[in-house]
Length: 405
Image (cartoon, rainbow, N blue to C red; front, side, top):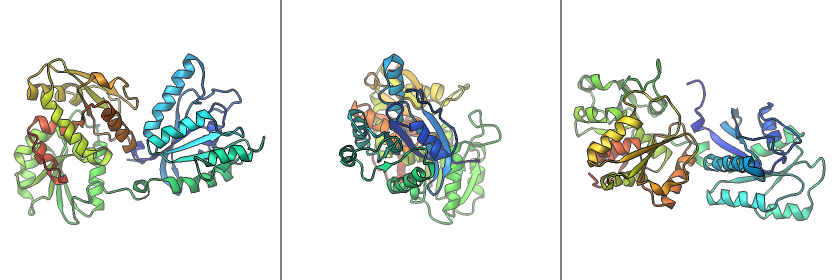
């Protein structure tokens, strides 16, 4: 891994009307001409992203969006794309010019308030005309200390924004929590079971496995990596009983048979369900598998797009395990990427991937949307463990105690 994955970066979205200076602000922040700047309203048509190290914050993603006051059929589509950025925004910047805020900006602010997203206000084009005290006081009713600037004054606006970004930054970004720091202690032995199969990129192991391994090393643990075919031999050679075994979910069935019951066992997907989402919510959602009926629709969501392979986990293995568990003719639909379906009411269950390529805010937003329509949600690893009858064992390391098998 050369750089910080996008999912682990602070996402800062820039919002406002057309021609308010959003693209100019992004270019000033990154000190590059990333977004096209023009006096023509509506120049930015799709969200523009820039990942960078933004000191002293560290790794961030800046997102420039289309104007929220866009018009016409295409304008409506651009607005919808902008709204989808809300779900993965950690800090929102609302930019306006000397005309101040009206219903557009206030609606934006209200949307961010609903999501508990901190908002920073920037009043641009002060070199053209100063905002009146009356208009400025209206903004101050919503956001403290709006930044007054001309984007041509790049250095000043960047310094001012850095101060406010640091103040608004979530605590778990400034001091990110350890993935397993509350589960393991220094000098504990942990075994990672990593199958090298068609899912594994050539010459590499996948992101969740890399991050878990690094976290164990940070916690001064002794980590041993093996494939499921060598697991028995690995366990027999260890002089100390492992504190924990973590496996790829696809090998759960074989691994659970080889790991003695007195050794804690879980999966990378379940570890990430806790880190990126809400483990209790996913755990409850797995119950719905037993309630599925013939012709019920299950939505399987993948955070990233990838080429389907033979025996694909989402399109082959999970449907096979669920049909075997329930004995029902369940229908499966699939959705990939950052966009999230709107018509969730037609589904009986949503199964989410491990979300290694998605930030936690986006996953929590998806959970909230499911809750709003009464749709149970779980994730790959928890659904697989439930289908195999080992869910209770798989969540025991995280103190979730309830019988659902």
